[in-house]
Image (tube, rainbow, N blue to C red):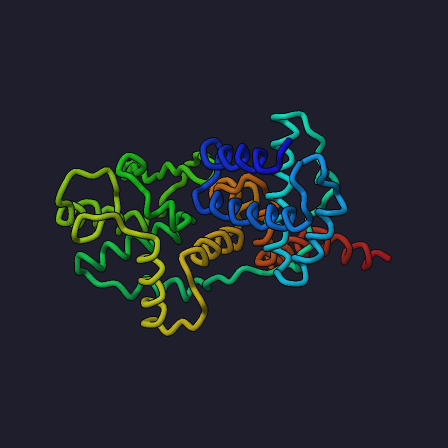
Length: 301
């Protein structure tokens, strides 16, 4: 198959049928362009000319310039491209044996409970402050992605039951309970602030004082300001508040599967990055069970 036609068909697929967020699609298109440029440099004009050695060479080149996470994203795109051609046009897949690079484990930055309390203590009783307080409470208290929070609609929130219905990545839906403390602030916003800010009919839950959508960028900027006011030096972002939610859930005794479901992770390996926070609790469980058993056995001996 001609490479240009293959690229055209794959671009149409990821643009129109790909079950991914818009940002992900843009990233795929960028990595695909770099892959096509590499093949063009090697005078490849048909997909049948591509073999595994070419792909491996590209990975080696990219590894010298980019972090493993960036290279792995390109590998994902290359594999997706060839899997698409194999499925749609019954072509051989030269990327089938390509493996992702190993990455050094990185622990997520997160807030302590005390730091979260400091953040939530920065709000007052003004209408604008109540709105921001409700936003931060839901991001932390429900483990929302910032995009999920900004896109919340009135129909997704049940204030009577204290539940959210979230449609996350891959269009997957999950039900998340709202903590009592967060629910109090969210109700205050819904009852007193939102009607004040609403200038025209809208299904969006969080709106600005001009009645417009609250953007993810404005949420990120506001959180930076709040952290400065609270004297928190960590680089806290809305996504770090989500990390904090997962961390504190595990510290409180929640199991990994529950946290996976509440966060909306498709794969539990994504959730497992948070297990580092649970070492003290695991040690406590060990001391109360196996540790006690081995100590009793040693005394018998």
